[in-house]
Length: 228
Image (cartoon, rainbow, N blue to C red; front, side, top):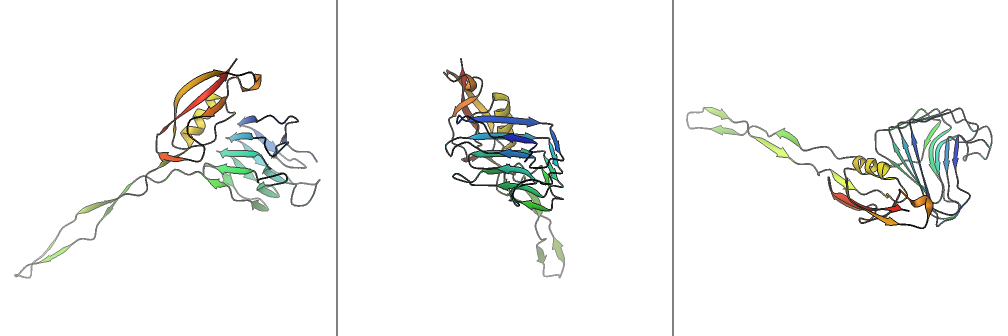
């Protein structure tokens, strides 16, 4: 089966991949397939401003082919500005060797026009800002039958936008900053720490605030970057 991009490392070490302005078209397998070698492995993939189209799945098992984006155990895929169109299945998660893979959407994606759009992604959408709504006009009746109206305005506050902290481990500092900005967060203090693992140099090895935690909009998340 021929996939457009098959991100399945042969080692068991954690890994990350960033796809920016990429077009994957007309594959006979899946467009983007992400899957860990073991249940303990973490694979972080950011798909940004990219198009995955025409994965028709002429080879492989039914239900596991022709998928625009597939995330298996250990895979965490973020979609932002992506177009996933005209595939047999738009997106799909699997759990072949442990917990199911995860696909998050920043809600600026176009997932449609597929035979089956597939698994609904987690939606990381900023909340709407507060809105001002005119209140119904009160009516005052005087003894002379004169009607006086007033037009007060009340402010209805919706839930403030929140910072939903993403999992930044394994991402470069530039990608981590974009991820934080997209989830209403901000980059905080950056600490650099020596690491014996060459591939972790220049990448986030720890973050002070746990992934998934909800904070006020604009909250800063401190990270530690590996260095040689």
